[in-house]
Length: 267
Image 1 (cartoon, rainbow, N blue to C red):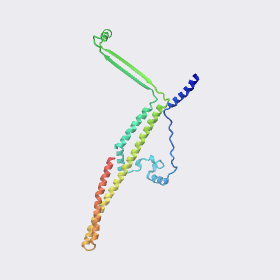
Image 2: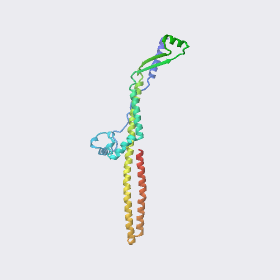
Image 3: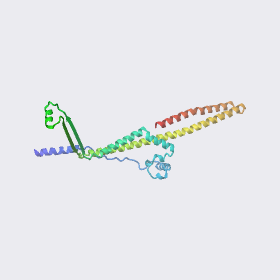
Image 4: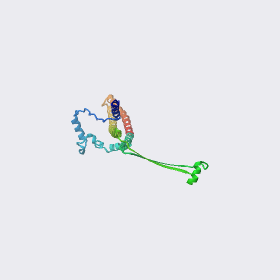
């Protein structure tokens, strides 16, 4: 009978120990990436030409955005947005929170020490037994009680709970840092695109104003020639149509400039 119980107890004990294994070691899967991408050499040549000589040979991910965008005005806009953008501020706060959680998890192997001190004061009635006893034996009408408790505990990381908690905190910290990088990358891309669009619209505005002045001069000359009988009325009408087209384009460009400036302010 004892042998029979031992045969049953041992498998149950092994199953209980196996069930206490709370986690498994995660193995990072290898992504089936190609050895070389198409047009990789041509793309690398274009990238190297855009990077300064001091950063050649390094990874494109390690190159600062200031090496791509050398315009001082654009750099100032990007620096201001990185400091004041709400998404960036939220990402930075998430990093600080994750860093604190990771720092806290590193103390998981340390013992926990707690100290509790309490004090109480009680004044019983003068006619009660406690009041009479306090007055006769203690010489005071108050009964004071003081106590202090000290406890020390330490958790053995037998099942890997503390280790996994630390790994999870580290993963959360790294994730928050990558989120911040992604937010900053999107922010830099949006600001640079809006800035260059604004420059393009400014050039279009200058060209449109030049076209209006040119159309006015052309129309004035054609009217003189029409009065002199050198051109037909059709030529004058065509010049008037070109002038109207150039004039109508100006408000649309000015509207696009205002919208683009407002978009930059939002960022």
